[in-house]
Image (cartoon, rainbow, N blue to C red):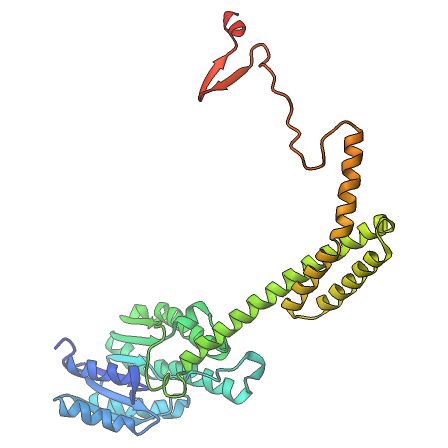
Length: 338
């Protein structure tokens, strides 16, 4: 038993990660003080006792410093020392966008996840400093490290704060032989994250939905840009050469132009695509006339039709020129003679 004789405090120990931490510490011989706001800690206390361990269950709301001080005092009164603190207590937050988070929920998330951790560290440090030894483990989150995800502004802020406190406190108390570390896990199924269409699953679905919306929005923006370019080029061509087509064709083109302009005002990507296809189709007659006109001009000048392969006649290499034959360099013989 690696922790025989050690005293450990675990917050949020009534369920999930906190409960498993408490049971693991007890298996290694530690005397475990389990803290939580729920009555579930009494079940954990009994579970540890049934397995031959020793535990003390104390109701505690870590977001209130007075409650934390009382729990730490009772721990010291019973065991006279504190060797380990695991700050696990936490809440998931409002799970809403920034503009939807109420002040009360914001304060609760910060006060439990960050304030509670601070109060617990502050309360146990005098005993650890006196002992010249101690271990503090703070439960952060990958969200606090990457600040990624949707509808997690309050949660990310609190867990980012946990990482910041951990770093600062490690520097501050290292001189007393006290180690301070943080764990930043990803999604773990616990009673806090499952049971309501798992909050984490909902966050993942929200992220997917937002990504799909962003993609659709970008596609519409691209289509609008293409529509603007098509309108510009068609109007320019119609202005310069519109008299060369029948009035009916010109009218169809103008009608299609107006249709595309209207479609581009909205956000219906399919409608914009249809309007662009319609304009391209009705403009074919004008394009055909312009092509034939250009071909006649080119023919009159003695050239090929527009778009034809006007390859220059092959020429013998000039004196000193390097030619390629079968992949080998062949130098003009006269050049070599020099």
